[in-house]
Image 1 (cartoon, rainbow, N blue to C red):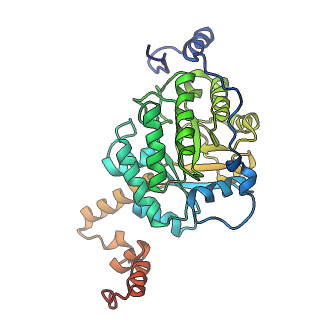
Image 2: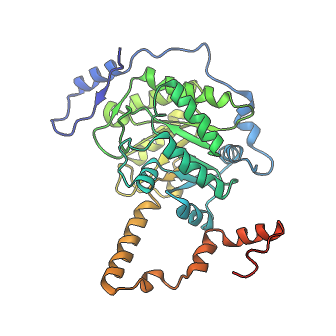
Image 3: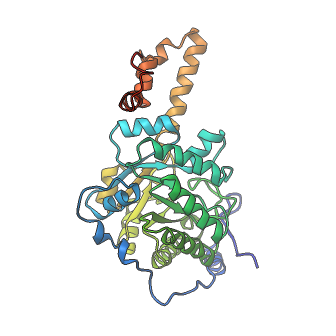
Length: 351
């Protein structure tokens, strides 16, 4: 039997509290219980408190989560934005599903991109600076338990440090749009359990599994918190409610789910207020991502540049004095020249 779905509708009057409660009860099917909460001694946060930061990105992310300070991860959408984020000094990056879909396909965030689209983008980004952890959006895991497991394996092999899996239906949409549908608790927890099992099947892997729920908008805050508590019990490392609408709700989320770290997603003009990283840290969040920090400014910059070119017949003003060499310096030209020279090459002695 197909899992029950709960729909947030925007074209009718809001459902009554009684109807919402009935919908939540229908959606929240009996979740399988485990004999004991998941525990992996090797992944205990206390093991990551001391020592130098690892060159392995997943281990490095766990060290950052275990130690003081908030992890700030700007959303990147391609190689250029990733290079610019690292140049700016960020020590963690976020590969947004919306940004990846837009940059690779020129499409909106409506479950159009495939697993291969996401993995291809991640592999490229992770190769640019392999020591900088990349957290990547994995949408719903792209299918049932076996596809979720395959997603984790492919992301880990691509060099991703951690991913988040959500509870929307397969025909999902951006978490800051209306009309979202979510699967039952049972199906959601199956996804998270599959992700954890896939991680544990990789020898020595410190890959971080982040459980995301989009249920707050259609089932309420209590249901969202319950889903994340269940996700924590089956092994999720970090917990993430999409669409936190107030400071008080974020603080409640952090206190209710402690000691598990909480991730907050800030999108300008989205459901969540424009918290700064300092705000989020003061409220107890451990990770803050800015999903559209690259692609939205990119739209403004490109619109302006192309309009200037159309109006003036030249790109001189938009280039702001940056020539090809200066551009390639941002893209790693110096490192490429040095690598060639150390290997005995002479191709770039004059460039």
